[in-house]
Image (tube, rainbow, N blue to C red; front, top):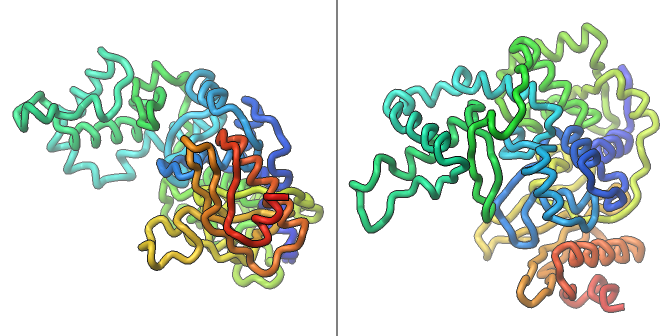
Amino acid sequence: MRKVPREAAARLFLGRQHLDRPGSRDLTAETLSRFVADAGGLQLDSINVAARAHELTLWSRFGPYDPAALDRLVYEDRALFEYWSHAACLIADEDRPAWARAMADYRRRHTGWSTWLKANPRVLRRVESEIKSRGPLSTSDFERPAAQGKSAGWWDWKPAHHALHYLWMTGRLAVHSRRHFQKRYDLAERVLKPVEPLPRAEFPRWHLRKTLRALGAAAEADLPRYMTFPKLDAAERRRALKGMLLGGEAVELSVEGLPGRWYALAEDLTALDSPPSPRGTTLISPFDSLLWHRARAKALFGFDYKIEVYVPAAKRVHGYYSLPILHDGRLIGRLDPKNHREAKVLEVRAVHFDGKPGDDALAGTARALRSLARFLGADQVTAPDGPLASVLKA
């Protein structure tokens, strides 16, 4: 069995996540699609303390870019589309045949909808009919006017919301655009070009191959925890993995210093022998695909990360929305930013390094913060008194 150094597995993972040279690439339709295809998805989240999750994730790779250009690439050029991968994600258009299979199979896999569908067939039909006749609509278009009480209209917000979600997950609707980050749905055929769904029997293998490609080398525990949708049962995954191993498409590995079975695509063995040497400094969104399985970050980088958004303020250790600091391929600490938009100030409310940072790490972190400030339109960066603040003031 091939034994791989932990450093090699970590470096290849960073390369596959396009973090071996953070901030060094221009954001274009090609580079955006290539990153999202390699990662398996670009996670969306509504928290906007500094910037939204997908915006931060792209800034980490591409540096300051024009958010309006990103919107055009996604919602006009359709380089990406919205669906579910690890969670709600933007997904590369090249992967749409596989996700069309997941959409087609959604009702079969998610039988918990059966009771609701039997009780609400009229809501489902009317929501789809309204969108067909009126064009793109959001959940707010189905809210009952408060002044009219319970008798208003044929819909209620909650059933309509469920209907929109179900129609989207089954591929009958697609996300046309977003307004104030709220999804606006339209009929799928008016948003996306039709594709032939991947044959059902091929999907588990595609899903596993996609995961292995994104991770480079994957522990057995990584396989169900990276791309978590759709939830493949353990038997399906085992059959797909066994087939890939027997056919020579995948190989079993061991990673030095780490327990358990690890796997990689056979075509990636050369890359594991000579992985990229990461250079540069950036900050990582809590919802970055690098952190989708946080136990993996701990195993490969020795970095124990927890997002504290849902932790009571008195019990937070590192801050509400702390961003890990990536420097030359290592996660070296975290800082908690706040973007004061009206004042145009990017405030670092707290910073914690794992050990004493060297001058190069401090300078790199300061550069990353200045880059983030440019991206956010902030004119100033502030930080608590300490080594980082001194570098920022220099």
